[in-house]
Amino acid sequence: MIAVALSAISTTAVAQQHDMASHAAMHGPDSSQKAVLAVMKSLFDGMRAGDSAKVRAVFHPRASLASVGVRAGAPTVTFDSLAQFLRAVGTPHADVWDERTRGEMVHVDGGMAMVWAPYDFYAGAKFSHCGVNNFQFAKTAEGWKIIALVDTRQRTGCPGQK
Image 1 (tube, rainbow, N blue to C red):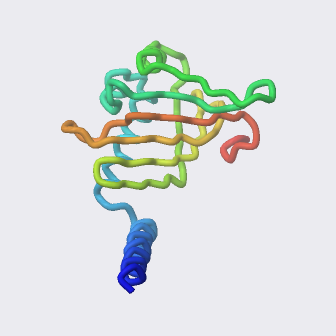
Image 2 (image 1 turned 90 degrees about the horizontal axis):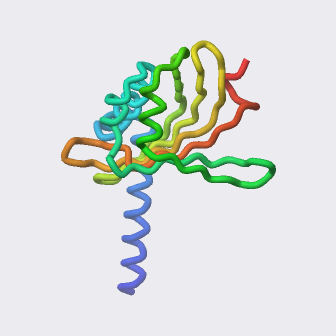
């Protein structure tokens, strides 16, 4: 009988957690979700400005960056260092790097958060590619920081492609 009661309590707790997550999804983000999205927006603002210091500020110093894709019919994973990414952002380039996200899904649990964000990437006015960003965040003494960023990239079948 106790096991049945505990099972019912556990099932109820899971249902309540699901209801709370559904409520947040339907009624807008809470302050933690907004703060996480603001960090993501700051990253893209820094990229558009070519400002590597602004971009560096949103990342944890030990952040991991990777791209997942397919080359020559085989699945691939390419890793970049934060230093390489910052150097690329800060190196003068003719076109503004404009990454536009849509339909972001944000999940927060205490000091951990995740954002799933489909995107279109433009070099200046020219469409380059699309994909999905998967951001992992941790709350630090300095605020939310990106601890991992994994993306996909494709050049065809993209919503923003013209």
